[in-house]
Structure formats: C-alpha cells, structure tokens
Amino acid sequence: MKKLVFIFIAIVIRIAEMSGQQPADQGMKAITQDVLKAQEGFLASDWTEGRETGEKGAAMASDYIASLLQLYGIKPAGDYPQPRGYKNIQKGSERTYFQNFLLLKITPGEGQILRLKSVDVGGTETSGFSFGIDYYVRPLEAEVEIEAPVVFAGYGFRSDQLKYNDFARLDVRGKFVLKIAGTPGFARQALTPSEISASADETERMLRSAGALGILEFNPGSAVVRSQFQNAPFDLSPAENNPRSGRPYTDYSIPGKTIPDRFPRIIISAKTANEILKNSGFDSDAYIKRSENNTPNPLPTLKGKFIYFRSDVKTETVRARNVLGMIEGTNPGQVIVLGAHYDHLGMANGYIWNGADDNASGTVAVLTLAKAFMETGIRPAKTIVFALWAAEEEGLLGSRYYVDNLAYPLKDLRLNVNFDMISRYISDDDPKKVIMTYTESCPEFRTITEGNLTRYGIDLNVDYQPSKDPPGGSDHRSFVAAGVPVMRFKPGHREQYHTPSDEVSTLNWDIMEKIVKISYANVYDLVNGSW
Image 1 (cartoon, rainbow, N blue to C red):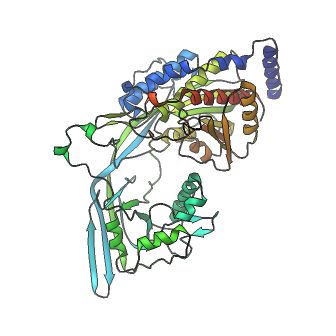
Image 2: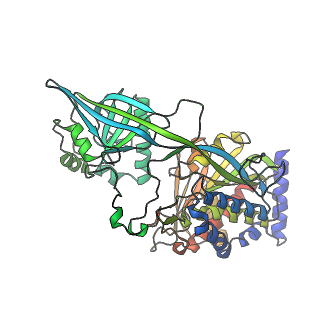
Image 3: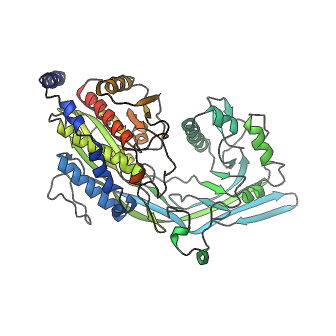
C-alpha cells in the first residue's frame, strides 16, 4: 500500500511539472540572497549576544527561529508541556517548537592538586605544580583522585594506515601516559587533518580500553599552559586585550544515569614535563627532529616516577532547548532531518562573538529550506524535520540529546543533512569550491548532486568525499554515531573562525545561496524518491 501511495505522489508531481506548475522549481524560487540576508541580519546581530547556550541571547534567538517556522507554516515538533520560566509563543496543550533539556555546567573547584613523586635509591622527592600555570585540566564530571606511575609515549601517535604505533611496546594499564602535543612531522605530511583527528580520537579510546588512567600532554615550547591576563593597571579598556571567549575551564554534559567519565586529560607546561623526564636522558628537540622523517626514536623508561592528581568540581544546571519543526510526509515512517546549530560563544570582556558564519549561516539555511518546501505546495513522501540545535559549541550536545530521545523509532531516521559554516569561500581565489562529505554506503547522493548541479545550473566545483565514518566536529557526528547516513556541504574555515570578527560583513552570499539551492534540490529528490 505504501508503495502505491508513493507512486501516486510521484505521478502527481510529474503531472504538475508537465503542466507548468513545477513544484520543485517553485521552492527553488524562494531561495534568494535577500531571504538569506534578512534572517542572517538578526540572528548574527548584537541583539542575540552571541547566542551562548543557557543565556538570554540564545533564548531570544530560539524564539525568533520558532516564530519563523510558524510563519512559514511548519508544524511544531517539540515537547508537549510548557516549561516554567519560558514565555513561548505557543499556548495550550499542543506541541511546542522546543525540545527542552538540562545540561550540567562544570567548572573547577578549589581543590586542584598535581604532584610528582620521584623515588630512587636516595629516597623520595615530591614536587608540586600550580594550577593554571604549570598545568590545567578540563573539568571532569565528578571529583577524581589518582596516584599512579607514568609511562612516556613520545607523540602518543598511532595510525593503522601508516603502520605506526608509539604504544606497541608500552604497558599503559594503571598508568598516566605522558605525551608530546601534536603529531609527528612525517604523519602531518602523509595524512589529512581529518585523518589525524580521527587517529587521535581512536588513540584515546584505545588508551581507555587498555586501562590507562589519564593523559599528560605538553608542548616543549610552552613555558606556561595558558596566557595569564593579570595586568589590569596596563589595560585601560577590554579592547586592549586580544579577544577571548571568557569561558576558561568550563565543561558541559548531559546528565546521565551511570557513573560519569573520570579519564583526565591534563595539559602540562614544558617545565612540568621536564621535571617528570628529569634524569631519563630524553632530548625533546632531537626527538622532534628525528620524528620529522620517521627515524627510529627510542623512548626513555621512567623509573620511580608517580603522579598524584586530585580535582574537584563545581556543578550547576543550565537549561537549553532545541527548536524543532516538521512537514509530515505521506509516509511518516521515513524521516529526513535537516539540522544546524544556532548557538555560539556568547560575549565577554567587551566583545560579542556574533557567529555570522558559525553558525547563523547554517541556521538560516535550514529556515530557508523550510520556507522553500512550503512554497512547493505539495506534501512530501517522507517526513522532513527542521532542527536547530543548542549546545553544539559545548560538545554537540543538542543533536546528541535529540538522537538519544527520538519521538519515533531510530530505524525510521533515514538521513541527516547538516549545515555548519556555509557562507565563506574556501579561499577568495577559489570561490566555487565546496566539499561534500557523505556516507560511503549511499553513492546515490553523489549521483543526485551531479544531476541537480546540471539541471539547475548551480555553478559549484564539488570535491566529493565519501566516508564510512564521515569526519568533522559538527552535529552530523551525533547521527553517524547512531548509524544514520549523513550529507553535508562545507566550504572552508577562514581567519575569523571563533573570533568576534565573524560578522555579517564578512560573508560570501554567493556560496551560501548555491549551497542552500543544491541542498534543496537534493532533499527534494530524496524525500520524494526511493533510495
């Protein structure tokens, strides 16, 4: 029966197109630079105060997003109850546009201790280090206290692709692992940044499963772990400092029902590392130079070196909310989620991180696609969810919460199309280039894209990058982790990334318009076709 319904819809669409109505083209006409600019202008303005999760600016932005979804005729797909404390535009017992959830905001407590205990035939020597100067650690989800020996792993790098493994002869169980920050030179030349990132993530997972108790990481050129801003008499205004987000030592997480993670990753200064490596014969400059060419590099054994680490935390709750709308398809058992995060870094020290590219641009893309699909005047075969995520900057938490709390079976979730930073050229010399990352098991995504670029005359030079495990640090990773196919178009990071200079005036409307148009064309085919 479902198949017959789908065939009927396809016939109706085809008849409409033959008669000149062309629903797909009607939607395409709704995507203009004026539409993009109108929405972007408010989302990335000072009024939304950088849209930091849990702050007033984010609540204002989410209300604005919900009002546009309502204006465009998109049905709400959020929670049913009205949460206390928010005066939303919805009333009564019907669903709202908001999916509400709590986050834990974690900052370091007063008890931060890192000590080195060196034991040899002459006795025991203890050295203490200063938090914020000699070391720092991102707050864990709970208090931790560990005393354990240390093992040195060089760069702590492993890659099956390069057949390289710094841990091949090391026993890490029950130990802290000391490593140099970064990647050996030969690996940087052989691997892409995404491959290096994936290798680092896999290495940390390996260390946890192998029984390591934590990581100590240092940059041989860093005398202190963080720049200290304590020169108030010389700073006559906040504008005289380099812009900073104002959020040091803060972590966010979704409350869970299990014992929280207690695997510390501690950044230490060169001085601290040298104290741990003292009397081992290790020469960091020689080691780094030999690593450039993958020259055999023996690792020193650290005998009688123990680390004592204690960290307590201050925890408070923060309210957050995703904004969700939908067009229900004739086959509601198949869902495509179009998503983008609307949050950014907020404001501090006299600066506002307006995040025009990151990620007002992606938010505007999803809103514009909502408008375009309503302009077609037809009901799609598959359900389309328009999702604007909170707390991406805090660790993809909004999209993760959505995937973990679906209102429908996971098997019905067919695809996530993610939009994050789509409004800047890869370089001014290459304004047509865009990277398309997608799930390797869906080669039809490339076929559809190539066809639509030609059909609609969209002048993009697409670098197709299929992957079994599509990389990146954005919300599509929440769907990849759940086994859901993904697709995303991405131009490039520019120098304004994560700075207060990411303003509307820097955007390239041409590339943004083209990405929204090709995404619309692709999604139109995917929601109305079989694949």
